Image (cartoon, rainbow, N blue to C red; front, side, top):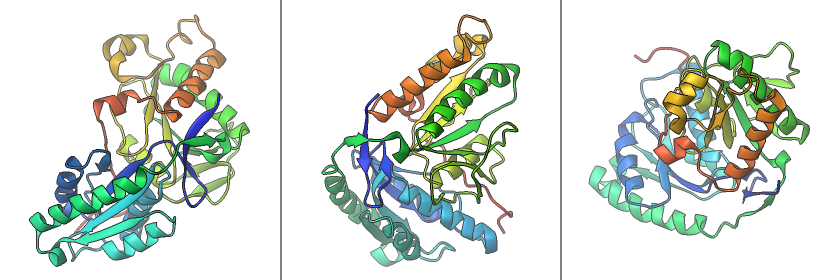
Length: 317
């Protein structure tokens, strides 16, 4: 299948064209929400970190936030800070600028308060949106994509149906040269390297990312690492999504599919019921990846689910 996407200045290809309103700290998250709500095509995230953090923890937060800004699904970024946080908004913007995309910065304490920041932010976001709209969709190769794999549980249906189908599909992607990130080590899989939480790989291959005790944390870390799309195997129906990267949910439990089918993308229950083989469901996953890459909305995108959770090394103080 021919796929189309957005090639960024750093050569990576995205499958969405978001303008990201990025809060450097919890204290600016609501301000970012109000800016994004007034600009069609802008998205934001609920950052709960960025203040009262030190050492490895603040570095991990910086790496994760910068990774979201540099993710190829993002065309342009407006960083909004408060002005006294651990994560310097100007330093965050400078890191994102290394990807070559346009970046603007606002600091609430310097802009004259929250109301003035929102007013200025809306104007800057509209300017960035106009730039993003000039980005053409063009043919891209599979080896320009980065895919994240998340396993949400170890139920029987996930282990015997959803996971094998996802592994079959991800193996085909890896054969085509796509970067494949994952948070769970598979005994039968050859890993090309290990990454810190939110770290971006330097070359193609399959990588194991550290950190992430929940599905939202794992997905957040892989997107910070550059994943433009997530494959998520679940037997429990976790509705987790993402602000910037589509999440394709694969479920092998026939009962759960009957209950939550409107929230799940791929029905893999035929593997358990012996009406479909693993390669057949795997091929369905690949076809859906192609369609989503070409613009089809996943169920979490239709529902507006946009969870964001940074894995913390230490508790806040």
